[in-house]
Length: 188
Image (cartoon, rainbow, N blue to C red):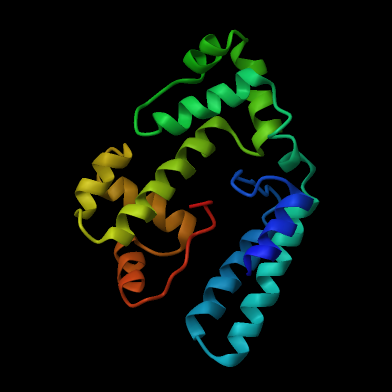
């Protein structure tokens, strides 16, 4: 997509760097079909990938909770910044709520309403985005990346990565090296 289209979409939808969680699962199927079509790498699959990408963006545009991230209370935006700065370290909901000065139940509800996912899901996506960036650099080993990203070990990172992307970290790195530039839908 051109920068002009991305800007237009961002103006209409709101910030595109906010995770969106689609509980109904319909888009998970679209994402799986998109990945399968992308692997075919022919003229028909290019059109198919284009159509499915627009379908996903349309669903994102219809999400009303995506717009609320900018209108979230300051304390929730501050907590998001804390998560982004320290996503590698374990932090509990009670600690985040205490730093925000609100009850943990209220914190969890407002965070989900503001960012479209739970605090734990948000942190997991931050860690996976970090993993993607590290895999693209091709320097650190998978074990080093797992440690740097805050996973308990390489197998935990690999299971989580595969669950969210359909690929192992090694497969992602190989495709990146071959020039296939794709991200896993994690605002990286």
